[in-house]
Image (cartoon, rainbow, N blue to C red; front, side, top):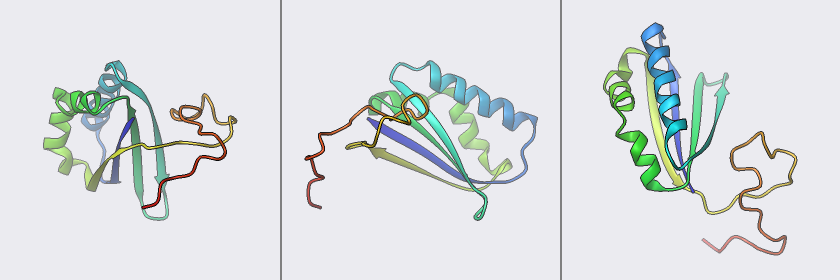
Amino acid sequence: MYTSTFIFAAGQFDEAFHRLDEAIATAARALPGYLGEESWEDTRNGLVSNVYYWESLAALQALMQHPAHLQAKAEQARWLAGYQVVIAEVLRTYGDEQLQGRLPTAGLFSPAPDQRMPPT
Protein backbone atom coordinates (compact mmCIF):
# COMPACT_ATOMS: atom_id res chain seq x y z
CA MET A 1 0.00 0.00 0.00
CA TYR A 2 1.11 3.56 -0.71
CA THR A 3 0.08 6.94 0.61
CA SER A 4 0.17 10.34 -0.98
CA THR A 5 0.01 13.10 1.60
CA PHE A 6 -0.70 16.62 0.41
CA ILE A 7 0.19 19.17 3.10
CA PHE A 8 -0.57 22.83 2.48
CA ALA A 9 -1.02 26.25 3.99
CA ALA A 10 -4.31 27.70 2.84
CA GLY A 11 -4.37 30.95 0.96
CA GLN A 12 -7.48 32.50 -0.54
CA PHE A 13 -9.94 29.89 -1.81
CA ASP A 14 -12.50 30.79 -4.44
CA GLU A 15 -15.20 28.87 -6.31
CA ALA A 16 -12.67 27.66 -8.91
CA PHE A 17 -10.55 26.13 -6.14
CA HIS A 18 -13.51 24.28 -4.63
CA ARG A 19 -14.63 22.94 -8.03
CA LEU A 20 -11.13 21.71 -8.87
CA ASP A 21 -10.61 20.22 -5.40
CA GLU A 22 -13.86 18.27 -5.71
CA ALA A 23 -12.97 17.12 -9.24
CA ILE A 24 -9.66 15.70 -7.96
CA ALA A 25 -11.34 13.95 -5.02
CA THR A 26 -14.01 12.47 -7.31
CA ALA A 27 -11.37 11.29 -9.79
CA ALA A 28 -9.30 9.70 -7.01
CA ARG A 29 -12.28 7.81 -5.59
CA ALA A 30 -13.16 6.46 -9.05
CA LEU A 31 -9.70 5.05 -9.78
CA PRO A 32 -9.04 1.32 -9.39
CA GLY A 33 -6.65 0.92 -6.48
CA TYR A 34 -8.03 3.80 -4.41
CA LEU A 35 -8.40 2.62 -0.80
CA GLY A 36 -9.58 5.72 1.04
CA GLU A 37 -8.59 9.10 2.38
CA GLU A 38 -8.44 11.21 5.49
CA SER A 39 -7.89 14.90 6.21
CA TRP A 40 -6.29 16.61 9.17
CA GLU A 41 -5.90 20.23 10.14
CA ASP A 42 -3.21 21.71 12.35
CA THR A 43 -4.81 25.01 13.38
CA ARG A 44 -1.76 25.98 15.44
CA ASN A 45 0.44 26.01 12.32
CA GLY A 46 -2.28 26.77 9.77
CA LEU A 47 -1.66 23.55 7.82
CA VAL A 48 -4.03 21.06 6.23
CA SER A 49 -3.06 17.49 5.39
CA ASN A 50 -4.97 15.26 2.95
CA VAL A 51 -3.85 11.63 2.91
CA TYR A 52 -4.90 9.28 0.10
CA TYR A 53 -4.32 5.51 0.34
CA TRP A 54 -3.53 3.38 -2.73
CA GLU A 55 -3.13 -0.33 -3.44
CA SER A 56 -0.20 0.34 -5.75
CA LEU A 57 2.15 2.99 -7.01
CA ALA A 58 0.51 2.65 -10.45
CA ALA A 59 -2.87 3.62 -8.96
CA LEU A 60 -1.33 6.69 -7.35
CA GLN A 61 0.39 7.65 -10.59
CA ALA A 62 -2.96 7.44 -12.41
CA LEU A 63 -4.24 10.27 -10.23
CA MET A 64 -1.05 12.27 -10.77
CA GLN A 65 -1.72 12.16 -14.53
CA HIS A 66 -5.41 13.08 -14.28
CA PRO A 67 -6.19 16.42 -16.02
CA ALA A 68 -7.75 17.96 -12.89
CA HIS A 69 -4.66 17.13 -10.85
CA LEU A 70 -2.35 18.56 -13.51
CA GLN A 71 -4.42 21.74 -13.64
CA ALA A 72 -4.34 22.14 -9.85
CA LYS A 73 -0.60 21.61 -9.79
CA ALA A 74 -0.13 24.30 -12.44
CA GLU A 75 -2.39 26.80 -10.64
CA GLN A 76 -1.70 26.01 -6.96
CA ALA A 77 -0.01 29.37 -6.30
CA ARG A 78 -3.42 31.08 -6.81
CA TRP A 79 -4.82 29.41 -3.70
CA LEU A 80 -2.03 28.06 -1.52
CA ALA A 81 0.58 29.69 0.68
CA GLY A 82 2.94 26.73 0.25
CA TYR A 83 2.66 22.97 -0.08
CA GLN A 84 4.53 19.71 0.22
CA VAL A 85 3.70 16.21 -1.06
CA VAL A 86 4.93 13.07 0.69
CA ILE A 87 4.71 9.71 -1.11
CA ALA A 88 5.28 6.72 1.17
CA GLU A 89 5.04 2.95 1.12
CA VAL A 90 3.12 1.59 4.11
CA LEU A 91 4.96 -1.29 5.72
CA ARG A 92 2.48 -2.07 8.46
CA THR A 93 -0.51 -0.77 10.32
CA TYR A 94 -1.70 -2.01 13.68
CA GLY A 95 -4.02 -1.11 16.51
CA ASP A 96 -7.26 -2.30 17.99
CA GLU A 97 -10.40 -2.75 15.89
CA GLN A 98 -12.28 0.26 17.26
CA LEU A 99 -11.43 2.53 14.31
CA GLN A 100 -12.46 0.04 11.64
CA GLY A 101 -14.80 1.78 9.21
CA ARG A 102 -13.54 5.21 10.30
CA LEU A 103 -10.00 5.02 8.87
CA PRO A 104 -9.06 3.58 5.46
CA THR A 105 -6.21 1.57 6.99
CA ALA A 106 -7.91 0.26 10.15
CA GLY A 107 -7.69 -3.51 10.23
CA LEU A 108 -5.78 -3.92 6.96
CA PHE A 109 -2.49 -5.22 8.31
CA SER A 110 -2.89 -6.25 11.90
CA PRO A 111 0.28 -8.21 12.70
CA ALA A 112 0.42 -10.86 15.36
CA PRO A 113 1.29 -9.36 18.76
CA ASP A 114 4.78 -10.92 18.69
CA GLN A 115 5.75 -9.37 15.33
CA ARG A 116 8.18 -6.50 15.57
CA MET A 117 9.44 -3.92 13.15
CA PRO A 118 12.78 -4.85 11.59
CA PRO A 119 15.78 -2.87 12.90
CA THR A 120 16.63 0.30 10.99
